[in-house]
Length: 305
Image (cartoon, rainbow, N blue to C red; front, side):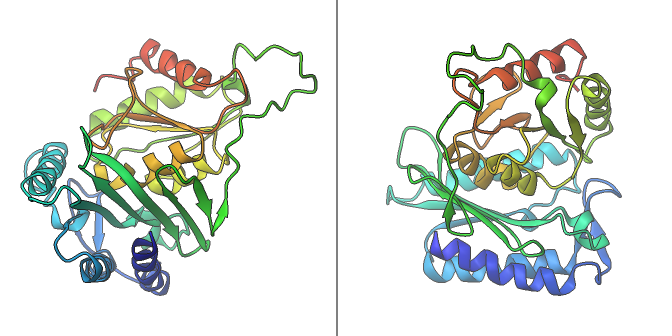
């Protein structure tokens, strides 16, 4: 954890210095999917720090994957499979895979908006399936370092987040609520890579607008996931997410007491692409918000795209 926090901090220093002051270098899947020189340099910094400490382990960074050729989703999934294959071919069972987004929320970053983050997830293949064992999400503009190690809880700037499921109701005898959607602040994804996912997102916004306390579209997956872990958002969901968007965040949310699920209601993993994240629930209401969101998405043609 110390190594990835150090890497995130060093990359974050550069990002903070250049946010809102740097031109677009290129685009990936379309004109909405930006790359700047800072993305590339931040990834170089992170890679140098990590491989300096773990020289024989495997590194997968977003900027190493060419998403501009063919189907970006397939390229991303293939890159993950390839990286996992490299780990599997190692003789040592302790080999790790570092999955990195050097600047998540590049459009916000390039515009000078403080909603961007460095995201680093560490995956182990020592078990029956790949498992994220450590993760960090760092927003240098806000000075927020959200981190977790599996089985050891979730931390914000080295202060452990409370994971107890304690009732907020005025009476201990009050029954759990039948619906929590109307009391929830939810961030909806803005998946720029495909027109079909943007249309699904628009349908979801329309369907939820009158059912929730509030909707936001911050367009930085890792930062929003960190805010779900902190219970600032009650939920976040999006389509066609990449492993570098969510690897760190999946562990961080789970270690904070939250849930990470696919749109079909099964538990998500690093190969999942359509995901719902929900924050720590009150006693007796675990999974309720997830189930309500899945129902709305299904009923309003937001699952297929």
